[in-house]
Image 1 (spheres, one colour):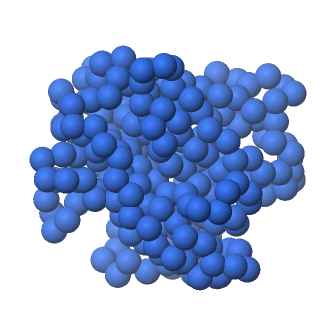
Image 2 (tube, one colour):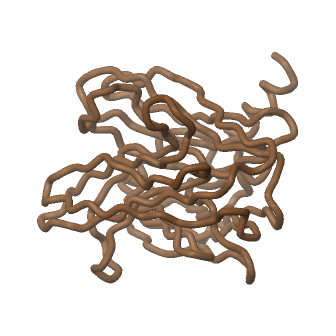
Image 3 (cartoon, helix red, strand yellow):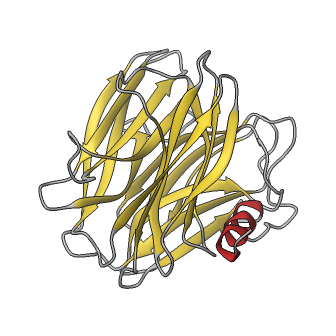
Length: 280
């Protein structure tokens, strides 16, 4: 096994430092909170994962993940029979050249589904993105992020961020679909790694940046041109503090096997780049 493969395996096993034993989300518990970047910086990406418990299916559900200036919002439910220590993360930097956040709203009926995107202007690329319920305050909206990650229009540059959201609530919700846009940073590249996701199956693995590069955003999307609701559940989605990788954990609740594309948006760095961690 090469040194690089060993490094990736280690990052997946213990991607981030263990949380204090008392900082946990109880079985059936729910969190909706934000991670703040330091003064003068903006959040270009973010995410969440279970900390200090190795690598397995922790039965968490990512419900919302989205930017808001210097903040990154995360909503997560713990559907496991055990409590879990949850880390929430924001990728922070001084606003890069061409920085802007774009948003597209979609109404999702009770029990419904939407798969759409935030689209960056011409000449810009998507560094991160996601989705959240908008205009309804703060509570458990019972949404589920099924897929999220960078994408292109007709094979062009990766200038949009596509997210698929299911609404498991008994009332409709308006969901904002976001992309964090900027001029392509130095060393910009998007790494894609395809893995098999069996019907009823689960994967927890990562896409890795090229040597010497850091990770901005990332995620996972099903490779299929139909754009249907594939009944996947994104459980964890997070950039690594310790290595240039982006971790995704996803369950396939559908009845057909799928190909899952894992993504890492990478570059040599951004001015003021850092990953901020909040532990619950």
